[in-house]
Image 1: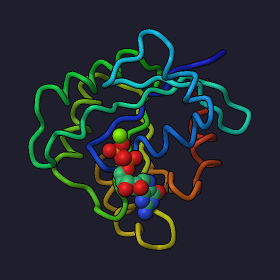
Image 2 (image 1 turned 90 degrees about the horizontal axis):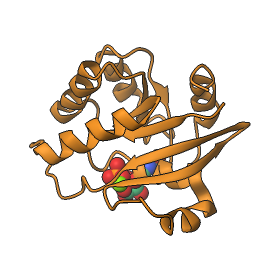
Image 3 (image 1 turned 60 degrees about the vertical axis):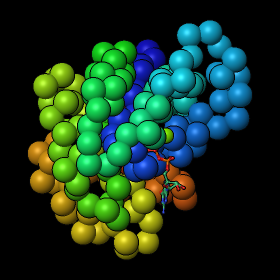
Amino acid sequence: MTFTLAIVGRPNVGKSTLFNRLVGKRLALVDNQPGVTRDLREGDARLGELRFTVIDTAGLEDATDDSLPGRMRRLTERAVEMADACLFLIDARAGVLPTDEIFADILRKKNAHVILAANKAEGSAGEAGMIEAWGLGLGEPIALSAEHGEGMGDLAAALVPVA
Ligand code: GDP
Ligand code: MG
């Protein structure tokens, strides 16, 4: 059984970096598929033994960090509705920002199956952010580094119950 995972979170936390890592070279094919909008990118992801569809909520880059335009909210809600589970990314180095709290609220209101991950956690730079992430009340955060490929085994383990 396959499933769909949406990567959600505020701009600049590393959603697209993770999407690209999960989709790899298959992205080129995906981009040519009909139904791929500018704002929601869909790809065939591979992680260990798991195969699934991943959605990147792109198109948030114009939004500023301290405002949450309706577009950002609508886009995230649409991704949640399309997905079986959401990977909610925060930036472990930045810690939990007010905008992250807004995303957490959206996910709670939508009753989404949430997997929380703190990205940019390579080295020890993200340790404080990891502790803050617990405060979101969305369970145990996974420490990830999308750029360096760290934490991918923990992510796979968290996805097994979804598959
Ligand atoms: P998005 O806006 O959430 O899609 O974020 P991007 O994937 O575009 O990444 C935003 C910035 O964070 C880029 O400069 C990335 O290179 C950087 N970035 C992404 N993942 C990591 C990571 O694991 N560690 C570090 N240090 N930087 C990262
Ligand atoms: Mg992006």
